[in-house]
Length: 314
Image (cartoon, rainbow, N blue to C red; front, side):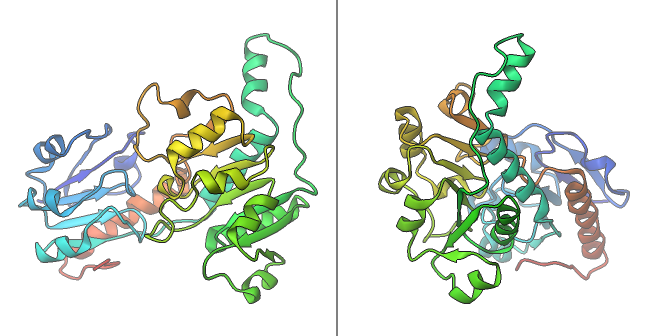
């Protein structure tokens, strides 16, 4: 019976959400902080299930795992796995289904939390503090700027319109036909979107074109009362520039669910800035999504053991 390691199972739920009986499965709840620790833990495992991009699998790591035969990622895209290196080493890489609903729901939780100051008001309630100390921002009639109008961005647009917001979108390949179909305005450029929007929400895939897309200059285009929300990928926004803008009050605040280093180190400024509402990358962390991840991971394993891998990424 092959050994299977399930990585970064923070909540300790993976083994209870699927039938792993065809393998000897072990769940690792704690994130491994170094490649050496990871190699020591995984050296004897033939199968590894990775949670999204929490643990990267570059060529150097794959070379140090001689027994690895099957690598599964939750979701069907994982930029943290070197697929070419895996292929060269004879490692099969498979994925699972994933729902786009949970990240959209969390994004709106961040938007509502920021604009209605839910964290400071709820904290004051628990501490017997002041009764009403903030003035909320209305969504109705405000402008929602969407960077990206794909599967997630289009759902964001629908909900924004339901709130009575003016929705404007931009991405490098976005067309008038696409925005018209969704009842959304097409911004003539990203700079225009940033200067118009009261809330800017990022829904782009990380690539060479989008890495560092939002930097000091772009943040300076935003209104002082505007909010930036990023539930996509941290590297799309220059983190130092964002912290500087938040500390200087050049934008009203930020809602963040993604960070360049995860887990975010203790004491990091983004944990403590008063105008930041930060979540520990919970966008996809829901019961139904996890059931899909781990049940389909087991299907991938069964198919591999039967000699007919499914949902292959390479």
